[in-house]
Image 1 (cartoon, rainbow, N blue to C red):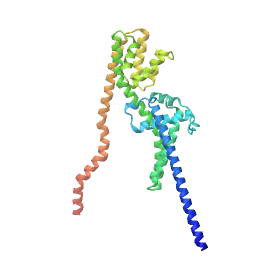
Image 2: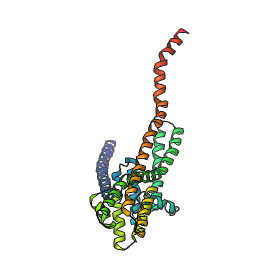
Image 3: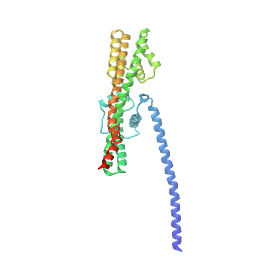
Image 4: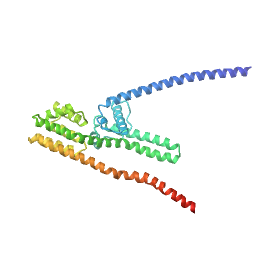
Length: 318
């Protein structure tokens, strides 16, 4: 009888503990779910705020590149606000080359050197974890190989994203630069000043180049920079020799009073020809690049399809 009572008390205690554990688990799950939902909401709000700070999202950037850039911007904001402790910034200082590279990518105000190094370190750790988890499902040797590959890929991803953004931004600039020069030259031919002609372009065009020149115009209008310094700063923010040459021609014409409209029309024709030649060069390289997948994937399959029956007949003959 005593044994039955002890067994009943044990079952009752286990049932009460199970019920308490169930409700405690539900409470913990609800708290984690609310915290995660709040984190996603704050992250979405931060990305919406940064959408105006990160120029170039409309340039056709890839999803991986945009994700890496957004992560760098969020890491920079968290470090500057003190919401996160720096891991890589403690032993990696500022780099003049990196600051210049971020400026040419249009990220000077959104991504800092500390945010860049912090994102590289976190991506490297994430790549290690993902590579090891995927490789461990097959073999330990593959897990070690994928761990090293994931670490290298995560470390290089922010650098690749910044480099791709620099090239894409320069390409978009050369695409709209001839249009801007034509509009400014047309305004000068109509008797307007350079500032009024540039304002005419900025009012009717909403491109990445227009926003860069609009910021420069606001700087020299408010007296923070001279007109020459602001124009040269815009040219320095792009990795393009054509842009630097055009800005120097504009500065020289404004300083010495030469015919600016004629110089802008000649520069527009030069920019348009340079952009067309780059596109033609890229199209001409496409067949050469297609030879690699053709030779590596299509040709072996065609050989197997054509020579397979012949080889089978020869093997049956022997």
